[in-house]
Length: 610
Figure 1 (cartoon, rainbow, N blue to C red):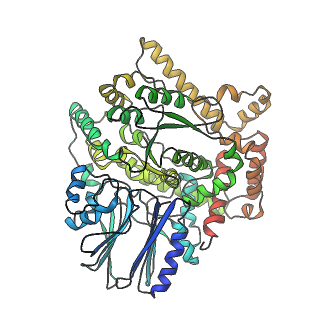
Figure 2: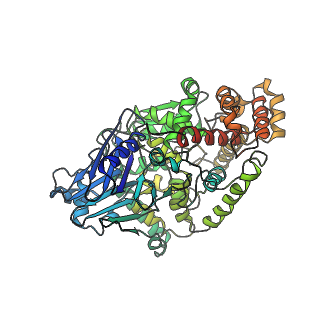
Figure 3: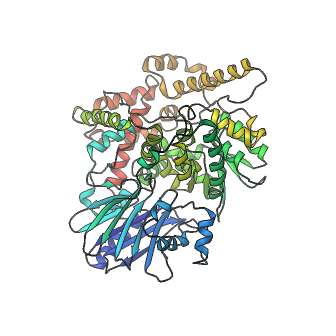
């Protein structure tokens, strides 16, 4: 995945240089990645980067005119046009689609620089005049930085595997972190999966001096947003419309192609309704499967047609199943184990999306930010799977989660759920293309904290925003049945039916208990999946593990080193797999967890420098 890596140390330059090359080599996951390095031996800093060719950060390193400020930046910054134009008076290279102006922005006001950035990013500033090195990330920590320090060196990287590759003593699983991954789908707070490796806190600007001392500073405190005055309903809605219209142009600029992953929901539709995109100016696509077109596909196709844009369905197909082993390995590798085997489709489908456009505009996180949807929770796998010695860590993870989840709804979404639980999915996608979402823009998040009590509940806010900006789009029913209807009873019936199909499909594809699995298995000659599946979902890992992917699953789960890991009860693991394969049990979650942990060991823990 694109990012930065570096070493701050007074060791011999050639030693740091060799280690840095190894760190960067481990981040070069695709042929379209480019990389580079920069070193200043006087300050003891060696830093490198990897990025997609033609992206915002494809100009590293950037300098001010006097060459006494050096900036290495990973990610994107969504500044207002007037900021970029002002920088243009200082540098002809100033461009919204290029990071070249950022060194001049830092030079203009060094103390306010980090707070003026807007996006997902991480980086390092080398200020030769101050003789200072500053390591930083964005205020949500979406631009993740892992680090390790001892009395001789400070190592950092966007990917944990880069640190593990050069320091064998770091190649061990932290049992508490793994317990959180199994229970919550991620590690919590600033913990990583690897015992001696930590995560840079959100909104950090850590400064390192030539004398070896450094200061761990935070440039942003969410308390400043949480304590704003609440607006009246109409005032909030007016401000929301103004803010959304003002920020959207920032996300529509691209020097090498922009496409939208369009869904049947409200969040991507609001982007189209409020933006001034000429017909045909935005290629659209929707992810789908081999079976019938989902409601998502049908509605998205209609929305794109009404806007005059092209639309394509990118599908899970036979190639995905044929190459699943390597795709799953890559998914776990690029995400440092934070996205599991049942997320392998993210790498596969986003690789397809790149052929349409290397930048993907999404409505991701709109439901969390503007509708207070919370899907982040802790859940235990089958208690018969986890070994007695390891069960304590899984249970402890639930307790830790409960202690960190009682907080402001907006803060929980943008500082916990999105950068913790949803980070792995973003990371997998970002390995293939650049992902953007206007719903994480600083201006919008700041405003959402001022929403009146009931404004962020339900779909009314988004439905009104769409209707006020594009009546035609507001008349198209969503995938879940929301939208106008001539008769109230018809609208209600449609929504109830869609919700019933959604729930039924979830139970059939993922949630059936063992006693129902046996009934379903005895009736499989009727091929009931044709009736129940494919209306809302296109991912059916329960069935795929049983059929198309059974060979891959058996090969890993029955392997001796998998069964002897200290986390699992060997006999229970074999029984669960056998019951799942025969159709008499549903152990999708357990199989997914074991496969993922095993691939973490094989492709991250046990992997040396490329």
